[in-house]
Length: 352
Image 1 (cartoon, rainbow, N blue to C red):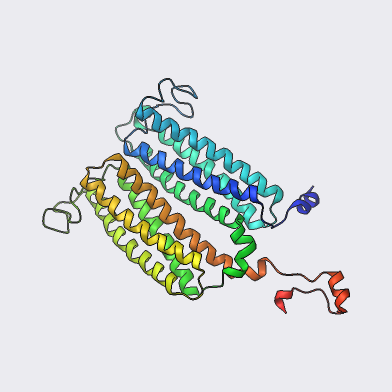
Image 2: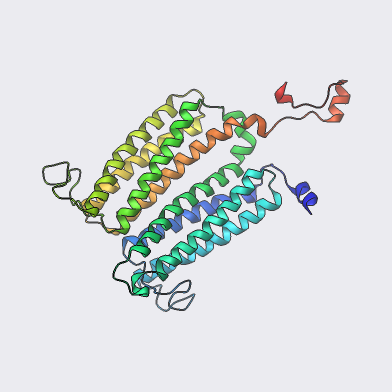
């Protein structure tokens, strides 16, 4: 069985599999959008049961009620993403030669399963169901659910990149190894964005989005809030984090743009990071200016996810460049060796 599977596996470009991976990326972003909107309008507990909604896969009136539509759509999208990931993981196991990519498919399956359980736990253990005086457990599960979603998006983006034609057929010639400093900046950028998203998740699920009702100041005439509590503190930390992330991303984009070892495509992605950063700052300010209107609030969430995905995609590509020669060697076959009159043992052309 193992021998027959290994014969069917290869590391060539598979168009259908690549398109399925990118479709899953798009569906995941839509799932994040609906999840963000559900939280923005406070509809997370419109159904008190899980995994069904009011005991049904098609609850009455869900297409006509905004809260029901947001939450039930989020659940349906989650189930569809789960099915897509299962298909990807099985396909990779059967046809993909690269072991690390098969393992990435397994990791995606594990993450999507954990996501489903966290989302369900957020409902099942809500204070409305367990009759407690506080809602700390449900809030904690909701925060972990939001953060795991970002990690899952990065895994899916990595899979889609590794399956793309650019990576497989043209990557070795276009993606040249970059210096360690640039690769480190990429890792720092991804970590900074992810930490900022964690702060944002904590702030949202503790209803602290308007804890400081001024922007860019924290009061009518000061950068610091006049009074402090947990909500004000986490909100202010999110603002400080936004400034720090902005500096890191701008430095990363600048280093990308002026590096002679980075392909034009990656430079363009760096420019995209700067554009998304500007949009994210405006959307963050709009949340204050428009008193937490759910539409800019939700867009703020999804643009943050896009920034993380783009920064991760660039950084992930750096590691493809590092291993390009080892991943796709040009081998001299026995017939070619005989035709050339070579007596030397079979070797990789790239190592000569």
